[in-house]
Image (cartoon, rainbow, N blue to C red):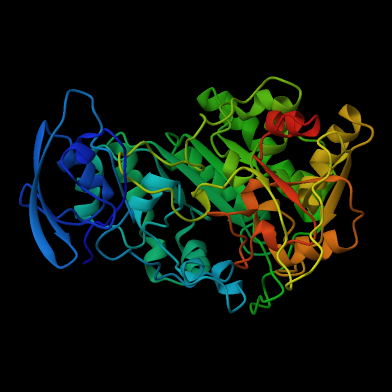
Length: 465
């Protein structure tokens, strides 16, 4: 078990007044060592607190006093201090199994940890969930959680997870709902496995067994060129249309029975099927926006000045909960917004000049993003362009902007004319780096990093980003 490590101390905060410093390790809080940042916050929520601190080989005791409502003012380096609960399923459709070698080690971690589900919106299958976990979730109010359902038929779910506990672990879903825990669910739909009649049966099972669910997203599996599972393949246009039809039929059933549509199909299904997206009003509060559900319509509404609200300024991305001290982890880390710019090169190489703020803009995005953004950009700014980047790094059916790498963007920009403003979405960055470890400064042309939000893009197109 590691110790909570302080990575930042807010100026003027109780922690700063007490003399805590970045690099300090917290060995105990009032005599207790927290297992994770959730317990850390509970222990920190006291008017006075005694911390046992390790600093450069020294052991110190620090007393911290807080006024009412005042944050402790510490950010720690990880969300979990004991071991992250990793996944013991062996799903055919698991995207992490399809990652190429040589990427950052953290990208290969397959977690199935309910704490990360609460903190970041990671989906858990509940196959490693226990009675003690249920007790903690209920006692500490860890809600909402995000649960992978995939199928409500026990045999189908077991086959999909390749884990015998797949048949029984949804009992924890029922138990959580019985205790008032809010749950969002997802179904990763795999052609020939849990689509068609099985998907119908799954949504019938949701209505019969789990009608309290806040939302259910039907999302397509991602298949990269590194996939080794022969049964896993992208949906055809006809299969995508069939999924949309099933979902829309069940929306009517849920609306009649529960007063809400409950289930939605991911935007990708409409793109693959060549169908128009439903109206924004059908998505409710767009709870599964980051799962690709309602993203296109909410982006469009924001672009034209209304609809789905943007995340508060300065807030971490994703479904990150407001837990004092928790880091914005992984692909919910700060994106490093703003202009980025100068490519590196050999000594003495010519450095491209940044284009004029009044130069015409080119929006650089993935294939799916280009389908959504292209018509908006052309309607608002006839001199603007959209550059769809082919995802050669992952290949397969991967077309989302969030999985673009620096290498693929660099290849696209190498053939692009200089003198234009090139805008890239912040979702393809984490801590200022692409998935392949490169940075915007490694690109052959200067770029501007723009939040993946319709209003932000509209402002950037006219030079107000």
